[in-house]
Structure formats: C-alpha cells, structure tokens
Length: 484
Ligand SMILES: Cc1cc2nc3c(=O)[nH]c(=O)nc-3n(C[C@H](O)[C@H](O)[C@H](O)COP(=O)(O)OP(=O)(O)OC[C@H]3O[C@@H](n4cnc5c(N)ncnc54)[C@H](O)[C@@H]3O)c2cc1C
Image (cartoon, rainbow, N blue to C red; front, side):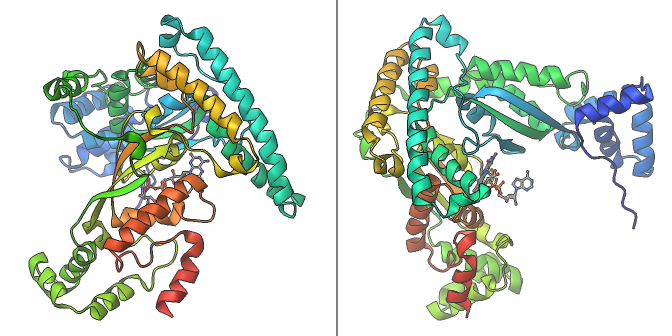
C-alpha cells in the first residue's frame, strides 16, 4: 500500500508569501490541478502521482480537460476535489441565513454570546432607495440601546445569582455570555456578523447561482465578490454561476397557479412543535433494517420477523444495538430508516442554531409578526419585560409600514426574538446527533426547549429506538439506567 498526502488547504497569505519568496511565476498554484489529475484517473493507466505532475506542469491542458470532464461529460463531482476558504465579514444576520442554508459547506460564525454588540448594522440599499433610511436607523439604534440596558441588568442579576462562578475569569466570561445571549433577542437581523466558510468548487458554484437569485442585494453582491475571488484562480471548475429560469420563475409560477388560498389557520395558535409526519412505526422500521442487515434477508422477511416479536424481545434488540456505544459514537445507519417531520415555530435566535444541522431537510417560511416573538425568561425575571415588549411593538409597527413596499427587506428590522415557521425533516440517526448537542447542558435554552418538545413527541411514537436519545451531558447517567 502507498498513501500520499496530495494536497491540503492552508492560509492564502502563506501561499502569497511563499510565492513571493520563491519568485514563483507559474500559474499552477491552483486547486484545479488536483481536480484535473483525479478526473483522469478512471481513463488513464498512469499512476496518480504522474497524473498530478503532468496536471501541475500543463495547467492550460488541465483546465481544458476539467471543462470537458466536469461540464462536457457532467462529472461534476470532480470539482469537489478543489476546496476554498473565505472570510465573510460585515454581512447582515438576515443575509447570513441565506448563505448558511447550504448543506455541503462548513461554517463557523462569531457567536453573539461572546461579543458585545457595538451597534454595527447594515443599511440595505433597498431600504435607502425606498426612503426608509431615517426610520430604519432610528429604530435599530433604539433596539441597540435597549440591548445595552438589558445586558447590563442581566449581567448584574446573573453575577449575583452565580457569585461563586464569577470568582474565576473563565466562569465570569461564561456568565457574561449568558447575559449577552439573552440581551441579543432585541437586536435586529440587520446586525453585522462574521464567519468563515469552507467549501468545495462544486458546492460553491451552486451557492453563487442561488445567491445571485436572492431578493437581497447583499446576497447578490456577495455572489459577485466570491466569484471575483476564485474566477482567475480556478476558471475551469466553476462555470454555471448565473441563476437559471428554473431558479427565477418556477416558484413564482407555482404561486400563480395556486392563486389565493383561503385557510382558517390562526397563526398565533400554531403549536411551537408538532410532529406532522413520520414513518408509521419507527421502532419496527429500524428493527427491520437491523434484522435484514444482520441476518442477510430481505426487508419484507425481516419486517415479518420483527412483527412476530414480543415487546420484550424487541426491546432487547434495541438494548444490544445501543449498549456499547460511547457518547461520541454516531448511532448506526439502521436509524436512518425511520423519518420524522416536525413543524416548528421558532425565534430567529433558535433558527440560527437549528439551520446549522446540515443533514436535516429544512424549509423555513419568512419571519412573520403574526407568529409573535420569544421573550427570554431571564428578561421577565429582571423586570424588563415591559421595555422588551415596547421595543417589539415599535419594531412591528415599522415592519408593517415597510412591508407594503418591501415585503422581503422589511425583515431586516425584525429582531432575534421574532419568529418564523419551519418544516424540519430528520431521520432518527440525525435526531440522535441533534439531541446529543441540543439537549446538552451547554445548549442554549431556546433550542433546548425545542429539542425537548421534539423528543417528547417522538418518544410516544418510537419509545424503543429513541431510548438512548439524550444530551451528551446525560449520556453516562442514561446508559447506567438502561444497561446496568
Ligand atoms: C453549545 C453549542 C455552541 C455552538 N457555538 C457555535 C459558535 O459559536 N459558532 C458557530 O459557528 N457554531 C456554533 N455551534 C454550531 C456547531 O458548530 C455546529 O455547526 C452545529 O451544532 C451542527 O452540528 P454538526 O456540524 O455536528 O452536525 P450536522 O450538520 O447536524 O451534521 C450531522 C453529522 O454529519 C456529519 N457531517 C455533516 N457535514 C459534514 C462535513 N461537511 N464533513 C464531515 N462530517 C459532516 C458529522 O458527523 C456531523 O456530526 C454551536 C453548537 C453548540 C451545540
């Protein structure tokens, strides 16, 4: 066996420095050569090392062959061997949501838990052009000033409550983070953010196209800027960057076909979490997958066998399937054979966290003031509920005024407390992972509440397959209860 490290990504400033030091003139410092070499593997008898050497030496030929293989023959996965990292700074929270919904990418964002907001916010062009700049700025400044007041009171309250913790620097920072975490519910979705994004060329092409079709100018501008950064570096692996008619018109036309739909739905009465659809018997579906795999029999025969088992035998099957798992082990793929779909009404803060679970399928509706807002319990405890509600009411007023002319952009003024409706599909394997993180003692309270409600709904339908579903912090205790 021979294994070579054929490439790895590192800081662009180091690449620049190395090129300058070596007086490097060749244009082969590009991830395209890796795509080109790997693209040739299947049809060229030579060793991969030789293919890589040739791709590095003959960049023009590599680019031509990339174009033929990726775009001519449609082997788009070849573009996945090229990888990019971007620093994205100063994008609004509303626009960040549109970027971070992409699944095949990695993101790490500066947490509002660990930074004190300095009032940095985006004033979108569309809002300036529609003549709302003054009202927009005034409201956001007021929201930010309420943030500072709430933060300071929350900090006093929490420092007092956790006086033992704050004696140490790390503990003090944690408690300060809790105050920031709740105070941020009053700041707007226009607040600036920073994050790192790492992505392969195939996924980047899709991101560029979708952002180019966004209703927000911020996102369209980001699409252009991202492309400007890679187009000379890797011209052969990113090509279809413009939105197609499918992106532009499809959804609009479905809307036209549907016309006005009258329902008796009362948005304010929607439950926060509802299990709207699931595999009919999740325990048996997972058990049948296990039996089919282990016994090497068809799914139909396995399901028959599972259906003939009494409850005790079925339970032992799950006990054995989960017993030796450590807290960091992912449950086996068997658990992917049971699906769940939840409808969730949640705050922007909660959504910001939930959307990061990339294996799930998420369809998020727009923020909607009729769905109300989430009031952090600690804000009630410090007696600042009225102040909080007052700024929410002012925000709703400006939102309503703006939404007549700017339905999408009015959302910029809404806050982290405002709510939207979400359709969320996860299989039980992803549910296990989600619960491990979001029921953990370190999880933020809002998403933790959602996770608790989801699990309580699910436990009724799948008591056996979810027996070890819990936060990481409860794993040891839960294992003892079930297996000892
Ligand atoms: C307490 C807490 C604090 C957090 N703080 C921050 C923060 O400050 N900033 C921030 O940006 N995020 C933060 N996060 C979000 C966190 O970094 C993850 O993005 C989020 O929890 C999604 O989890 P995940 O990536 O493990 O899993 P998912 O996206 O749900 O994916 C499930 C699993 O699939 C696999 N997987 C999916 N995609 C890939 C991939 N591309 N490569 C390899 N494996 C993959 C992994 O095994 C992963 O665990 C925080 C999360 C928690 C729980």
